[in-house]
Length: 377
Image (cartoon, rainbow, N blue to C red; front, side, top):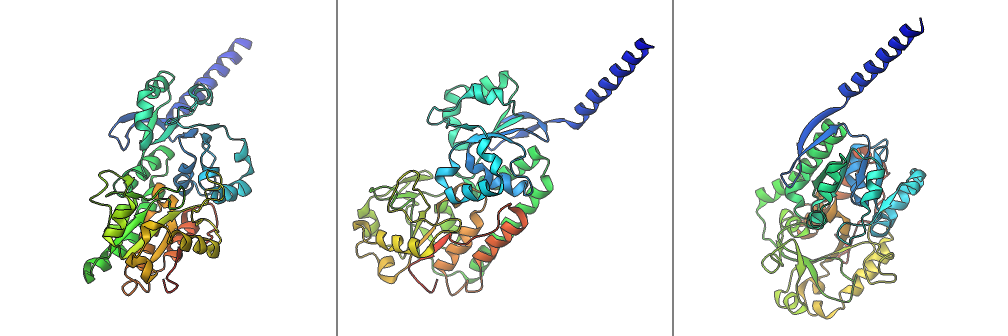
């Protein structure tokens, strides 16, 4: 009798094993670099190569955004402290999540990552060179941990949709990913369709990256990221022909000589990096009056001396983190209102962002992402 009991128990265990295999579907996915990677989906344990990846994870796992996360990079609390604080208040257990340093600065701990036994590791494409030089992909492959690249920073207008589809596949959230992609595309079309029909004169726009973060001036964008968003919003990116890549610098004399019609500065609360800095602290629930005061202070720098945008009050600030998440369409709508107020009087980027939160994100919406010296905009 004992023998038959053992056989029955073994058979039950074998059936359970077979059942678990059936639930795990090994598929080949293609990441944004074109690499084919084998992953068991849906993944249950994920390492986020950057804490700010919660921006897209939350959009696909609204009810339990951290249920898959077994570790993440330690950047969110400094780069976007208000959002981190809001998540911490709602999900206090995230304070216990293992954190990592970055691959680009050489502080990533691969042994710690292996110990967490993730099903996949998500990395931003800007860490690709450092990841390859350190041989991390091969090291992780040897212990059965696949690594895939996504991109919302280097070429976000090109790579946001494939990145969201990839993550949707990994999470078993393909329908939710497509729903998000459609909402994003429809929101952008509200701008681009109107511009195509009206064909207005395009103002010259200087996009300053992280103005006031340091004393140097001026970091900007080439023909991608915010530089490309300016073009989608009906402007001409001043630095398009000056900066060959996504990010770069223009000197103050170039700004003065170009005499832009509009200036848009990216900002955030960077007290964790530059305490007391001149940066404009826009973001989740930000103090808009204080942000506007600091924005006005940045117009007094030599680079903006006598510039048309400053004279006309067409100087604005937008949340910097739009450059690194799939919500760029909100920034495009807001910039379109700044650049073409007569065309987009009825467009409401705040309502768009609020709807995004209500439909997709775990946090309630709070304003504070945009300020302008032009009170009418």
